Image (cartoon, rainbow, N blue to C red; front, side):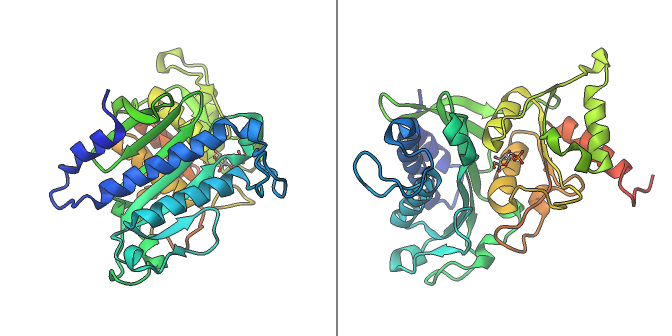
Length: 337
Ligand code: P6P
């Protein structure tokens, strides 16, 4: 089976002007993912389950796993030298290194180092999400916020690591989506899911229905549509909601389905972050033949205004997202037939 680094090197040829920096950056992310995976797998034993202030078996100051993960990815990207700035869910401000090496870096990264970390204590799958852009600021100085506030259409790569029953890295550089499963016995990611395509339609919808009474009318009507008895169209669908975006999206990517985190009356932009949750997952969905929107606009077309801005999120099988968008339009106040 092909290893991740063999595959990345092979695909590098797809980029006529690639000089190997993106290859190196993706490999650096893969290495950090293996280190994070090791800590997650022994979290229960090493008492690293998310309790700050305690000390682990080595007597070291305890770090929460999401802080540990953040540190590992930052260290890998800093040492690799290809990345001049990072926007991370764990850091309010942009991370820059101001070193001669990093300031020459051609890329910037937006990441959620450990999404769904509230699930760690109960041993539910969690994930790392990342997206890569070319810097637009002049090389030779620190990366800037503007380098990160590019629309998702400018993304050059995106991916996630899912730390589940097995650990997988799923990524795209704009030429389709490929999945690699970690073989812990040799510490290598092996190509296990080549050229992933999301089914155009599916029968799974993923949403936290505890918020139902606060959903927009279009979402309520779409949920009702999913629950209607219409065997010819495969309905009623089934609902699956893990509460971990990477896990919910990964299942829907392979089987078909839609994940929704809409805005509500209380939180009109919803909960999920545009830069390091919705854009990378939306990029992967589109690369696999699916769709991602805020219910009205393509997610990747949104011009970010701030590093941590939120956006409503509808992502998955193209026909399911389109149907949800139809309900959103039909029941929106300014709907014009
Ligand atoms: P709720 C995890 O905190 C997360 O960002 C996503 O991974 C997940 O899908 C969502 O929030 C869960 O949010 O409000 O349903 O608990």
